[in-house]
Length: 197
Image: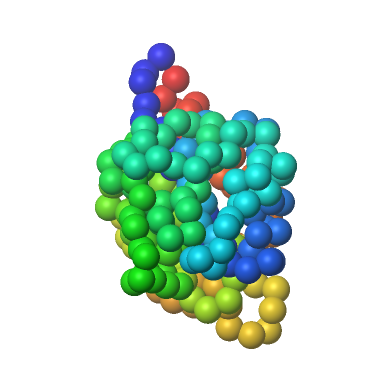
């Protein structure tokens, strides 16, 4: 069997609805042969229990990434509120310190842009619920780099992350509810696996 580099799936969300989307998405995957990297907007100064909250919904291990950590398929990685998770090599993550909020409301773009730069061709960017437009620019960068882009169907009439991502720059590969997105990711990952066996 031919050796392959793993897929990297980056997911961005914000607020309570975004957190619920993340939990619902993780519940859909029993095991995914991909590195999953998650960014959720959170207060910089508050203690975060995001790892524990997501772990209750995930059958894959949820880990707070260490600096220069070798990322493993079948694992979910998050950063700390003021240390943002990014990719610095094909399968290596790092943390970008941000004590003065230089990347405020741009942490999803930060992650997505790092995937476009270092992730190769096996990258998927997903924008889930949230306010404002973080993720729009980074998702377009993933698309330009040859990756796959997915956005949850916008649920509010006001401008929000999903609606802004869809409208920003060019077509999105998949727009749908959480189940549609979860299946699309599984199909993308498994289809490539079949092609290289």
